[in-house]
Image 1 (cartoon, rainbow, N blue to C red):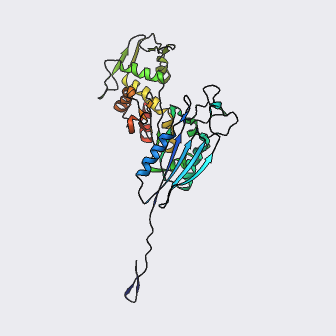
Image 2: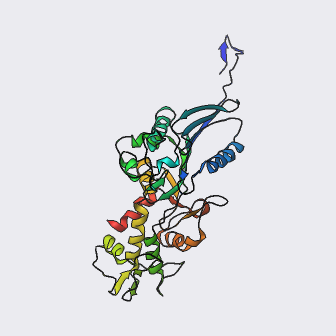
Image 3: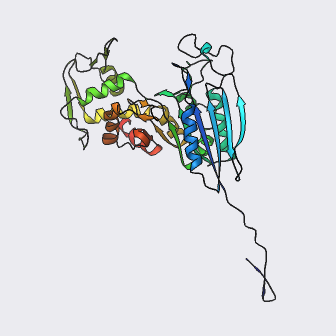
Length: 345
């Protein structure tokens, strides 16, 4: 406001301060431990897409983790300057780390999940609300991204549910790192073979409808031996074990099985609730996009949920009200988790 002196306006110089938006991104690339290549190309492609949409008043910072190469690269684009790069190096992962199909450190200091969470926590402490996207490009299963195919113990470098519930990092601060529109995107699979077979067995009933409402009290009567799953070249699996574990029933595969649709929804919701994606959404209070249980990812030309598992996606969407993100990946969020918990109260 101009100052008033003796009834006259005195002009003053006004300084215009440019307001810039800081957007930060964390991109984690695991490795394919079968054919030994990095998922880094997918992270680079996503980074290029985000940079192409950058405005003149936005500053962007990318933390790029590459497990195969053993690199954390921080790429900064600030104040109209070009790319500024800082890099931290670890021992690269090589075939020598796989005496069998599982990762072993063999005395190396390789990149680990223990290097990921502190970066997110630091953003939460120093620049809260600036983390817009966290991506994990890797193989995965219900318990988390498989960054290098390690086992639990001293050599465990893969991300797991236990990490999210751990007291090692401040859950509130981790969640505080994210912008209100922030999201975690887990691009790998979530495909327990036996759960896929169970869902298929559920659908093989005249009362099941792909779309539309099925009343909770609708009864699904299945004949004896309906829940035997006989995969090619593998031992037969008694799928009633999965039913009993969740419902507390005592069925055997040779029994006739009678379930209400409410019980079927309880089983399907249970699998949604006990995933790495759900743990992040619940403890960090951030939206997560990930493969729904009993769906798997294909990677050509980009990551997408396989059309072969679309029937499982439809079960979640049409009968549990799950929302979808990109390419038929499911959305995991705090409100949905709380809503589905009612099936288990």
